[in-house]
Image (cartoon, rainbow over all chains, first blue to last red; front, top):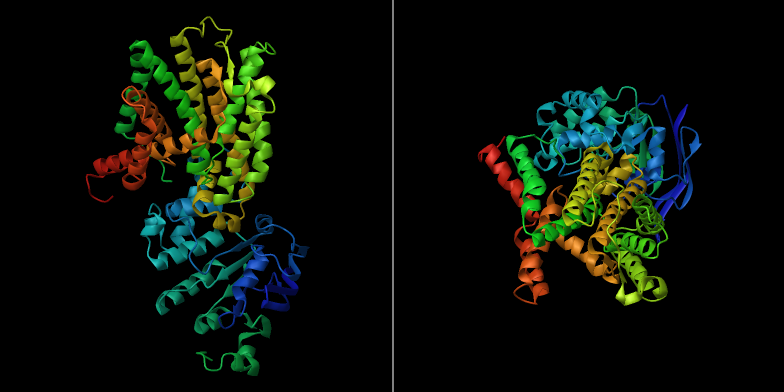
Length: 250
Length: 324
């Protein structure tokens, strides 16, 4: 079954064409699709169009065969869509636990409930603790986000995406700003935690990209330059051209 | 929003507050009783604004709209003898507030930040103008409506007695604060604070933030409306200044002084603001100037207001200066 279908999608900001007539399909069976491309290729814009944070200029977005092009952001998440951000985008004055709770309760029927304390939902706390344990951050559950290191905040960002148990998860540069060893650690966590989820990852670090990917889509100047298995991408002439002069570990 | 630690300090403070409100105030001279009644009513009003501004992050200059319209509803319904029963008057006033907030809110909550502020200000001003001019025959324009009489609660105690009325206000306030307490600690309240701190992320997580803000707007209007009802009965007189945006500004002012986004901040704000006004205006007519200076001092040096500063002190005491 298809998880995501993009059909002739375009986006322009005034005269600037950011995405130009893009089409691709990702099935539910695919696990990790990595999108790479030089700066300004339109990767994050593509994510914003999929989640509905930006409206497309033309084209259509299908989630699990449903046309969601005109659907607002919050309704698309009902399909099991979730995302994280390139720049850590958390609730800075909340504790780690309260951040995770917000992500956990989003699809629960009691999210509008206003008379019983949130502390009463013990199983949410237990679930949050389980998640935190997986990334070795249980000891910091009562820390305020601003007291975390950048690497720790990145992991919480990742957990926020995972917490709602999505079927399709978009990770926007999950290793941005991390050291090489931290990046590899995060990549391992992604591999371990996300065995049953279709994940689309934007990645700048080629080593991580090739380590994670089952399939790679290469974007350049708003167009898909190549799309295929990592081995194929490595030998692709066009991709080499795009990355000529930039660092690309092949 | 860390879960609250129930400390002996807190219990002690609540007991103290209870003793002051239930026993000490009623024993004090008459003018103190009147002052206390108005402070409690204002606390309800400021708390309503705090739900919207302090907890949801929507800075409004239109809170007086709800306070004023319910006060006018009470005055119009009772002085014209349209409805006699207090409970029916209260219900109809609250309904009016719901209708007004639901219709204005649907437009106002769509926009953010400064635009929200300006829109609420404009709506409030429109309502004030309406009360002043076009429906003068009903509202008596600038003169306001005199002769509102204290309600008959169909209970053995007469509200014409100031002490009884004080206790009545106290009970209503307790109910309002209890409701607010529940709302803030609930999953719904948790989401409101999330929207205040990072709405963009809340949308991405999948929350319908418009609906949350809209409900918060209406809830805050209802609570302000309850304050307005009490005030109309308390003052026995309603005039257009209850609808004026300056009164909305006062809510913000009291909130900042007391501590924005804190539960007890509005109470401190109402207490200090009303208390000082009462005290200072006995000596000088330049109350507004002094009010302005206090406001500037709070914004510059006590960002968290009174409640914020108290919380800092409490933290220092409970941790003994050592990090937990």
